[in-house]
Image 1 (cartoon, helix red, strand yellow):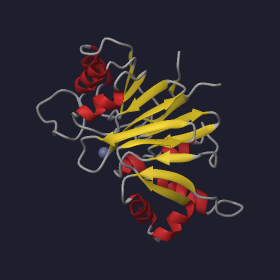
Image 2 (tube, rainbow, N blue to C red; image 1 turned 30 degrees about the horizontal axis):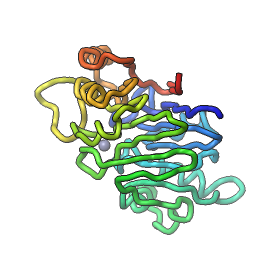
Image 3 (cartoon, rainbow, N blue to C red; image 1 turned 45 degrees about the horizontal axis):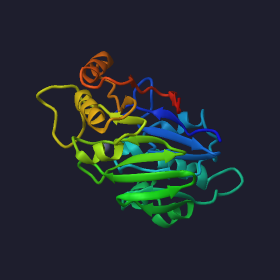
Image 4 (tube, rainbow, N blue to C red; image 1 turned 90 degrees about the horizontal axis):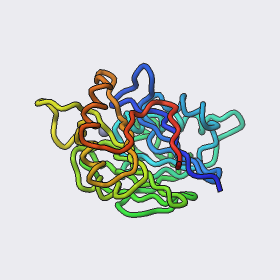
Amino acid sequence: MAPMRVTVIGCAGSFPGPESPASCYLFEAEGFRLVIDLGNGSLGVLQRYAELYGIDAICLSHLHADHCVDLGAYFVARQYAAHGPKPAIPVHGPRGTAERIAGFGGEDVTSVTARFAFHDLDPGTVEIGPFRVTCDHVNHPVETFGFRVEHEGWQVAYSADTGETDALVRLARDTDLLLCEASFLDGPDNSPNLHLTARQAAEHAARAGVGQLVLTHLVPWNDQDCTLAEASAIYGGPLSLARSGLVLSPG
Ligand SMILES: [Zn+2]
């Protein structure tokens, strides 16, 4: 059986950058395609890696625009498809997701719920296609979920947006790979309970004992060499920066 594959579609933090859309990750296994987050610009790049109507399920970590706004664009694509509207696919997100997505285009909520079957996320584990998906609340100003996605024993954790939190360490415990946000660099002006510095991301990875750390949600104005340097001083395992098009798989 082919192993799970994760493709970084978008890894720019907080808004799209010149080299990457905002947050979006494509998880594939057994012909099933799960997209986690659909930030600004991601629907375009996603089509390089998956057929427009080939997405089977979507998870949204939270309802900040840089993680969900392109679900509004995807609604348009499914609603006004060439040969009629496409059937609803599952969307797992925080409470209020349908209203948020409808609001982007001034749509009735009933229009949006005809194209997407919304499921409220709660801390715990759900099966989505071939994936076992565990989520928990992380530390961000709006309700936000981090994830652990498992298939055939390969485990990938994704921080979403978060300040420091033991929940991320629990989600990432002994996983093969942690996709962890590193929005900030060390400094006196970072707001607490919002985002991680690269050093804090590395501390969470080290505490969780992850097999590999990929830093993501990289804000375009940060110096990427500084991001790597901060993290490598703390985390001694395989460490890299996400980029759009990066494919991650076991081995
Ligand atoms: Zn956010």
